[in-house]
Image (cartoon, rainbow, N blue to C red; front, side, top):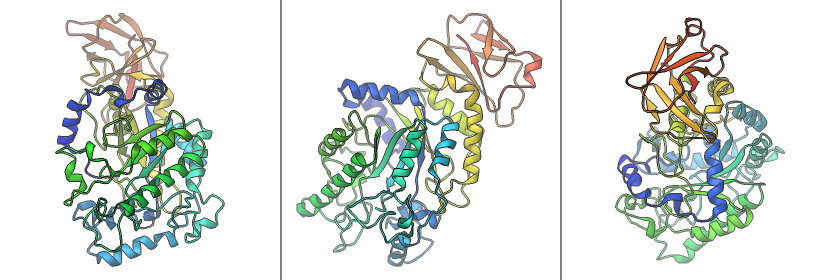
Length: 470
């Protein structure tokens, strides 16, 4: 993942500007319909996984020469560090890899689409590409001898078998490519290290390489629903403004890989494919992906928050995972504002998901077993929140109030007050997961839910309680 794109200033700018371009510039009715269907899924699973997991370091960024916190190498000599990093493919052997187990866990957690990192910025391919030897399926990698060596194929097949939408993350920049970071020149930052206008043939080779790899993903891996492109500094000149121009570095070289050509090819192989060219606002960004951020209110366009379960996108041995309570509250907050949550976990070098992450997913699943009806196929309703109660609305007009319990709040309150909604029927209402009725009455400031004493000490679940208000 990139670490800088959704700066506060850009986020504010985007909200103002993007509202002028509903449907993300898309006019194809079939794709617009698919965007709506994607919005109904609400909860997705993302995995950042590569040879870097062996060191437990941040994905890709430690080989970038920029002086940034996430590029740290603990004082190591840069050239020596990069050489050792690039050799990690020769020791990567995740023999405990079991994608069916991942898919089952994610499904039970309530997730319904998957985005897998087929290639991050370091250029190491987690799929069977013919465009480079820097791949988990190449003979240089010990796991290539395993029949499951093309892990992208194994993962997508396993998740599709559980009914998931399949999505492929792909980094447009490739720091292993000699036609992106050319060995003839030094590397100043994350950008291409030569002027594409001065060396058009060299840049065309890289553009062709990018095109060919995406075509492999679109034609060799079954049905693909989402092409999720990262590396927003690789972009056409028309898309730059005063906010985005600094991303392309001090040289300001334009890195246009011809997205119209790529998109046309991709949709020939995968009709109605959703394309997410992150941060390049236009026809090929079918929905927005704020990173590690949640907007303050509902937005006028399709969006998902991509968020880490821990502090890191990739596996780190001592990662600090968010509590189950926090994760459920994040899901509810995002969904009540009309968005989707794409929750990331980094698998370890042995091929297992971290035990603590698995525990969180199991606990989220227990909550979803009772309350998922208020999540799937829901939309935002004004107001999206009142006090500690968030609201969602289904297509049939049903309205749900979701009370966000504090971390250590295990007893339901005797009364819950909220405001902002109108024309709710008073009397008995349903608490999901319980056969004991609660009551709703109108008050001078809104409505009040009354919870019987027998239920207060015995709530049907932890973390958040869901009431069917209408």
